[in-house]
Image 1: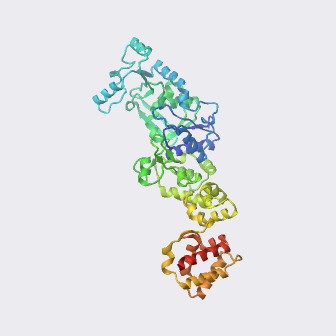
Image 2 (image 1 turned 45 degrees about the horizontal axis):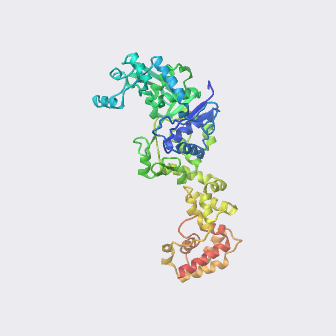
Image 3 (image 1 turned 135 degrees about the horizontal axis):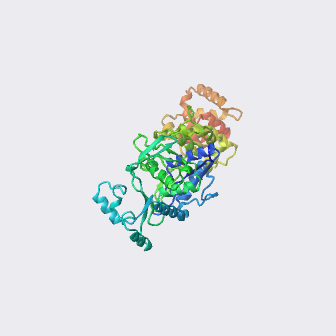
Amino acid sequence: MNRPVRVRFAPSPTGGLHLGGVRTALFNYLFAKKHEGKFILRIEDTDQTRFVEGAEEYIASCLNWCGLNPDESPENPGNYGPYRQSERKASYRKYAEQLVKDGYAYYAFDTPEELNEKRNEIANFLYGQKTRMQMRNSLTLAETEVNELLNSGTPHVIRIKIPTDEQVSFNDMIRGHVSFDTNLVDDKVLLKADGMPTYHLAVVVDDKAMEISHAFRGEEWLPSAPIHLLLWKYLGWQNEMPEWAHLPLILKPDGNGKLSKRDGDRLGFPVYAMNWTDPKTGDLTKGFKELGFMPEAFVNMLAMLGWNDGTDTEIFTLAQLIAAFSIERISKAGAKFDFEKAKWFNHEWIKHSSAQTLWSQTQSLLSKYGATGNEFTFKVIDLIKDRCTLLGDFAAQAGYFFSAPQQYDEQAVKPKWTAEKAAFFEAFCTVINDGLNAQESESLFKELAEKHQLKAGEVMLPLRVMLVGGKFGPGVFDIAQLLGTRETVSRIRKGIAHFNL
């Protein structure tokens, strides 16, 4: 690296954080940490009409949950602030005016009505080389008239003047050589009538001011690249321009188009990192966190959407991702989102996490059943974690360890319940003792069933239902061993009384 690595994640505070946005943040973070650089959070809030109260705090919370903590941000400022574009407003006009002065931009005084009239008059109207001389701007008006309009405070924007018949090219770290024909690019607005910059101007000015070395963003921004490249050139900063990488899209499960919130609603899975409640409508959009995903699994899953390390390895900690990450291994093609695969990642992470880690993430669920985070709780978690795909599964899988079932799966037992089975269970209660482990209890259970001329399978299911309430859970004798003899006998006798009714 020729200069210190400084990368930025620059979301707009307009609502929930899409998993594609989190992946962009993740790839920025991994690259920064791999090269001992800085990961910066910059809030791009120049479009005040789309600003949503609470969205900035939500973005910070999502990054925090994922463990992608910025080195510099609005909450943790460094030497390159402010980190909100709305607080950098004065700097943008200066550079926009400089572009006008140097002949690379111009003032446009067209009213919304005049623009609409042109759109109605010209099919697929673009404000650019072919139409700019038909419009009301500083290229068509006399200098005196332009000055009068400016001095009188007439609303106006500043547009970039895209050159004719040029090729604008750059090397994308993922896509290689990319070239654009300027004849296909329109004169984008750089400074709006309210004095706020558009993304095009702000991203260039801020990246220069913050000394950004590499700019990673979604491929939907690729068509904007020629405007940004020209701005770096026109402002005289070409030698300080960051290296670019345009990340592949996250696609719908069928591969047809970019994954959207609507797709998640339609197909029944989240596309936001965390729950987001729209402050205007009160509508709740569910997130991966609240659905029961571990942050480690969510991050691991996102990393594998469009990247791999060249091996068959799929499970990575964040530290392992940092060590293995390279831009060269990011695919050019979009990555299909597969919710079943996402759940697989979560299941794998749950299986391989310690009981203490899982307790920290399920405490609010399990404490409702009386769990306290003691050694018994950890043993329960270790016994059932292989059966849990989402963190919420721990409630159903663990609850019966802390309190005896209040209801039973009647249909699983009652139709085939007999006096002989009741007698068998009474006998079993007298022979089971604390000195037996799960295997020994199972052997004793089967021997006793044989003496009572019962098949072990006939009484195994009733035992499970008596202990847990239904046809689920780990090995029934593992459950009994963890519950202990006194609790096991108590539950069996309670079950006998229930099924004898």
